[in-house]
Length: 346
Image (cartoon, rainbow, N blue to C red):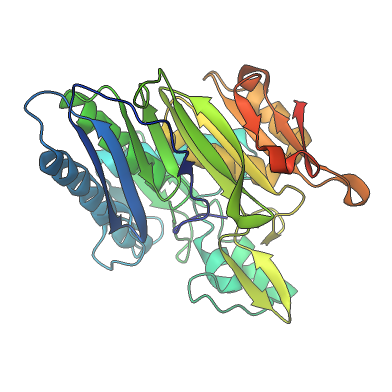
């Protein structure tokens, strides 16, 4: 279910050249198993090198807390901690765990931060899968969701082999922290992108907003639509970026924690939220929930949320691109997709 690697990369659509009086920084680097990219309008006295170092330092710090690959990370320590023992965690880990717990509750378990054993069983960590048997699935499913928080801010695992993987929100959290640090340094216009998890500050050169492209879930090398957004986090979930092939069948990485099987029925989900963390987690939850239950979940949220769900067409007809009312007139379908995709108000 969770997403420790890149599962969708947003493309910043090329805008007309525009003269600006302020300096800009446009850089990218490898981190957290993916590519980080920033396009920033720099305030006075902040150099491009300083802004890059600032973002890199944030991501390094986040990775030291949430990595499941580093044996000395804080999350690895939690995963190796004995059952029924209360562990005090850092403010960052606590913030993500409580956010994950809220999403778990709101989605009735569709978002589960303890899906690590399920991902491991299907072979997504070693990138080579085997089809689990019913007994194996039942055994792993019994490990999911078994945690609680104490009144003093500690985490307790109820079962020994329950393990957390916060890949479904950690990159969104990292983007939020980078955006916060840049804003503190005076940046008011910028796009912060970590493996397709975005936060859009202000607007692009010559614009009051940013225009981002959304990857075609049926052809990962192309983009089928653009969306104009500002001051929000953006994240998309799709099963095409990460999968395992078992007996000739391709299984997507987004797991349904209720059944233990890969989630099916939706091609991709894109969420626009006040924070990149919330967008990151909700895009996964909506992918698992499907159209009807996603609508119910969004109605229960206090935050202003917009979403795009791409649903297969019936009888090989046009795929439906369901958009929430707040995105009306903000989504542009690329002309070459007019015969295969259809925008529908959701």
